Each structure stands twice: as C-alpha cells, then as structure tokens.
Length: 361
Image (cartoon, rainbow, N blue to C red):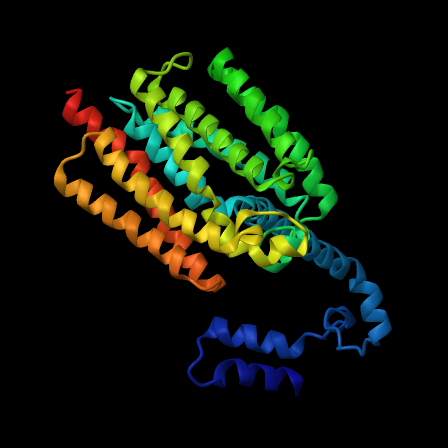
C-alpha cells in the first residue's frame, strides 16, 4: 500500500514536475534524525547575576572609556579655555591703561611699521604687564575682592600659591624674551622687573602717594621705551623724536595718573593704602582739572598741532578734568571718568605721529 501511495503521490501532485514531486516525497518519506533538532536551541531564562557576570568586563571597559574621554575633555578645556582666560583676567583692567596707549605710542613715533615687529612689541609688552599684574594681585586680594571681584585670585580661579609660582616663572621668561632682541632690551627688562619688585614686594606703592605716582610714571616710560625699540627694528637706539615723546609722556603720567585711584578709594582704604584721593580728596580732584587743562593747552603747542586738532584735544581734556573735579565721590562716575581719561591719554600718545608726518616729512 505504501508503494501504491507513493506511486500515486508522485504522479498526482498538481502543478509539480516529476523531479519536484520526487523531492517532495523524499522529504516526507525520509526519517528525521535527532541531530536536526539539536541545532534549534530554545530560549533560556538568564538571571541578572549571571548576566552581570557575563557582561561585567565589557561594561567596565565602556565606563573607563567614558571616564577617560571626560577627563581628556576637561584637560583640553582647562588648557585651551580656562587657563588663557585666567591669564587674561590678570591683565584685563590694564588693557585700556597700558596695552592700548603704549601700542599706540610705539606706532606713533616709528616710521615704516612692519606687522611682524608690531606683533613682537605687543607680545613683549603683554608678558611684562602680566608679570607686574600677577605680582601686584598676589599682595592685594582683599582690595580686589572689594574693587575688582572678577580678578583670578579674588574669584578663586587660581590659588595664591599657584599665582606666586607663576609670578616667579614669568620673571625669567621676560628676561629670556628680551635678550632675544638685544642686550639693550635685556637691561630694560632687568630695570622693569626690578621696579616691579620694588613697587610690589617691597611695598613701594604704599610708602607715599608721591612715590606711587613717580614709580608708575617711570614704569610706564620703560614700557614705552621697550615697545618702541622693538617696533622700530633697532633694538639698541631710540630716535630723537621717540626720546622727546617718552619724556613728555612720563611727565603727563607723573602729574595725572592718580586718576586711576579715585575709583579704588574703598578698596585702598580697606587695606590702609595712602593715595592722593584718600588723603586730600578735594585737592586731588582739583589737581586733575588743573593738570589736564595745562597739558591740553601745552601739548598742542609742543607738537605744533593745527587749530582743528588742537580744539578737539583741548576740549576733551577740559571735559575729562571737569568730570573729575565736579564729581562728589561717586565711584561709578569716577569709573566712567577714568574711561574718558584713558581715551585722552591715548590721544596724548598719538600726537607725535602728527608732528612726524607734518613737520618731519
């Protein structure tokens, strides 16, 4: 019967050829071995503990990779963003009082400026300014908390110990940078660095208000000398125009630079510092008006300015001097007046450019 059924099936499968029918019948007729079932695995329940043991190594490696990536990202952020920002904050308040006026001065007294030398000059000025600021701010944390809370030490961006290490690292860096240009620049850096120590670590800024003004004027004049030598391309000798300009600039600083002390009276009084606006507030304000009026009248004559520039320069000086004289100890107004003063002092520094272009050809 099996033979008949098989024969019948082979000949009566609808729509199939003889070879297809033969294959189909062989499938049904052949016995299924037990090995065919052994390749099919039924899903098994895995306990959480067993799963954890099986995958613990992979998970730990993934977690270590994430941690290492996070640490690398943090290190890159601190190196590329956090630390440069900290260095900038050390010098932020002196960009307008030192960097801009001195850069303008070096350009005004130097003919035929090259961009490369100008960049070198800015770098030299900034590195020495950074040395001064780090040194100064290591000694005036209480004042900065009151007057300038965004400075690195006051804002806890850097520890006092780290700032002191940075301060003494910057000293040899400034000397090494200067000797790259010439021995004259090296000695200028020696003089500046010694003045920084005398002003900050030796307390020269707190001895007397007059010594403070004298040392500020001397230091800024040395900044102007170094920056001008680098821009000029001759790192050993100043032109007669540059010498006259540095002397006039030093005298202006000597008689008017206490403009910076009006806005800081609260912090200076807190640490016991004696400045002219604290000791003699009315005299200090009157001296600002007299000094700026005198220089705004004399400098146009000294540099032989035309009438139009003379009127603008004199009017600006009178305006700024009147702001200081009329203010009634409002710190916010003194801060605004100091911004105006920095604009005026930058104007002072570019006046030699007019004389050089018009009267020296």
